[in-house]
Length: 165
Image (cartoon, rainbow, N blue to C red; front, side, top):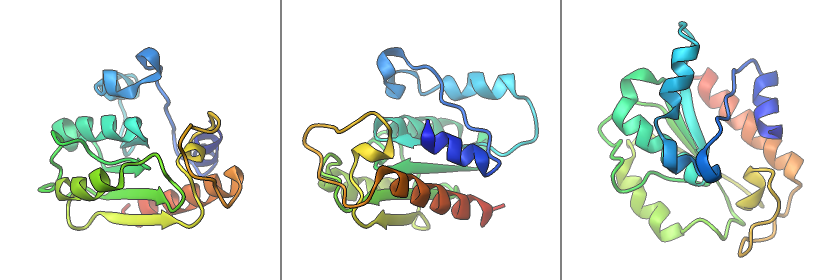
């Protein structure tokens, strides 16, 4: 929620839908329901953290004509989400202390992304602090505060979106 609040303070509408068992991967089509509730001319960007980002990539691969862009927070597309041929702005943010993300799979998944995908790595950032759910077993130790991490993600995401409007 704190990251969503910071994005909201920048003027973005932010939706965090309820997902079964807190796993976005189980309902990647949930975005359609939200869009139907807000039938307007606003831009739609989808994304998420970890499996939430993977779920967003599944949606984007099927419904790319409905969205303006995609972002990954310590995440990457799955094998079935080939976005490489799309002219869709995509931002991928990772952290140097993230020991949850599978680096080999992350590198391999880059073939499913457009060449223009922007990759951004935050020094000292772990996996767990992209969210606000506490420390995830096996993760690296963050070298900066959760608040600093959220501020940097907010600023980077805001800059990325605004530069494409």
